[in-house]
Length: 178
Image (cartoon, rainbow, N blue to C red; front, side):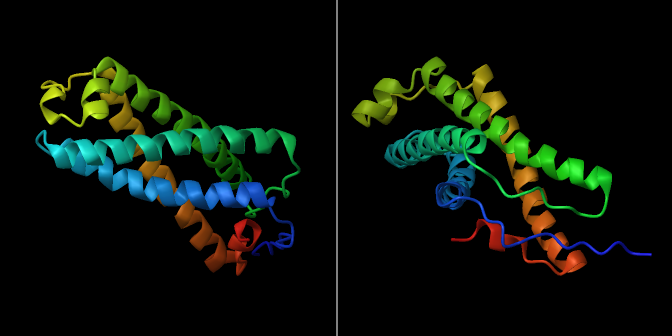
């Protein structure tokens, strides 16, 4: 017999959390392709501009994630969604929490790459000839790996929302929409 799930979708996240969630989502959707495009580009003005955009958006995500983590511990949150399966419920919580850690680690690895790769002067002056010739920077490898994990989690998160809608006929987006 199928368990009927009735989550209280009237419980919403606070306005600050909602704004940060969607702004972070949009910035991440910008960051993913810019990172992959940059990795295949030769040094030049276009790469410097893309790197500046990527760095700016990444720092914004870092700041927003820190603020959202603060909201997470300081403000009331809606109760956790129930899926009807104990392990699935735990997976949902694990994915939600992992996003925080992952975004912070991604930001730190990105900042470390800029510092360790000596990108500073090239970014400040816009002179592409100052970009490092070799990119065998350990933090860059970590940044790329964390990016792939983020993409997988993001797909899983979106898939979970769709799956919840199909299986339980509940629009869980109501909790995170303004």
